[in-house]
Length: 122
Image (cartoon, rainbow, N blue to C red):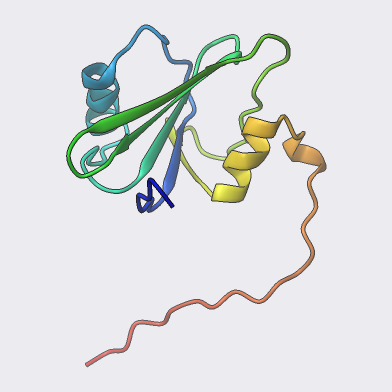
């Protein structure tokens, strides 16, 4: 693979974002509003008010990369949240669904085993 960067978690900023914002302003939003470090290996996702534009910000060790896409037709769907936090931790699958225009409410997953880590007490 020509380019390979590790991506940790995926954070969707759930409030509308002005797509004129550049790297510095988006980093400020991550730091000040999401209370996260933009210099980690997480991917930060921003969508505008009309949900027709998306920007993704990722630190790649030596600089920031931004992915930007404007839809010619249709909108991006934002997952529903129970809390009113500006940030939502989503899975890579959910991000792919958002990018592909899948209706998130209609997605049903079959039961699968997931391992939860239990911290050992010393």
